[in-house]
Length: 437
Image (cartoon, rainbow, N blue to C red; front, top):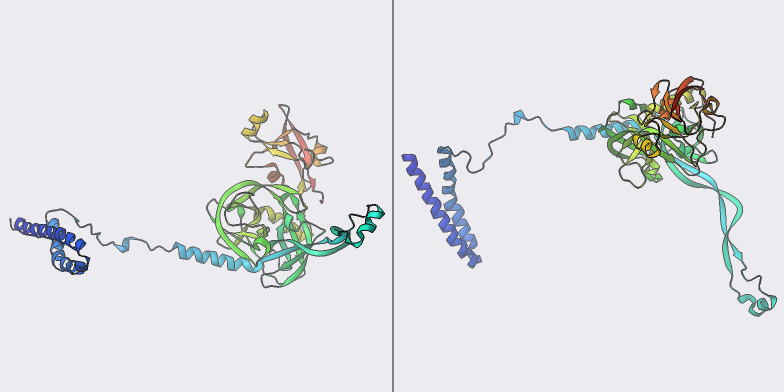
């Protein structure tokens, strides 16, 4: 009963406070100059009484009526530290790989064009020329002097794979044998470079500089790459700056991309890694790293007309080329000799094909479906054949023909199952070394 009376007392104070607030609120609005006085009055006299209401309400079992949050037990919450750890991992990975990342400039002899005077009125009758004399206007037009000068025409990136000066990059960066290449190492030193070997099927090239004791990258395992893991791209962004860094995630696997360069044509590359780490034209040939600072890919292209979509060649695809160059000084690439379209259910339906998987042998603007004199030609493969299997490995979107053939060596004998006009047959093929382009 005493508790009830006590609460009636507090409720009375509450009513008094509210009435006072309403009265003085209107008064304050009418007389702003007195606002501070009444605010002090309310805060000093009324508020202490209101504070007791919450206590009394809790006595009736009303709970936390004022909305006060009870203290958190910090011992039950793990401290949040991933941002610090993540940033440190990125910084450490960059520090580990950067010394071995290089910038590459491309120079070519280009014609010297000058403005040559042109007498556009030389064909006028003599009397007209005599009449106007030297007042006839003179024009000049660009003309080839027959001379050339060495001029920088492009740039890219690469990374050192051996301490004696082997550098891995893209073929579309360093595949033109008529060009000159200059390498700038991370410490600012400048070297003339020569093409050591090229693998067009994978858009890879190896340069050689005359140096020793160089820092090298650590090669990772691209087969272990997973969607969502962090990726770090390092390179000479836009060909204008020293090494720059961008960070993203692995956003796709087993993609297909077309890589191209000036005067070098284009190559379709299967099973590449997709990342949203910013890759610019100057980044081509630079390394794609994991958080351990290991190279998991070679930056190769960006999707035209799209943002935050870049591609990298899995490093495991390049390991055999690297070993081959170190041992023999060249890259021996197994060669079948067909151009093809990857068959999907949509393509099969649209073109009324007998199967919805495989590689449809078909020519393009680059040449015929079956290259004359190639191993495929010698084995009897024809245009419009659909290659279904290679050594019992099914050919589909996840296992492209190019990727499967690249697993073999020059001289290997393989069996190829094809579908020709709805009938299946098996052919024997001996792989040869890809001709030098």
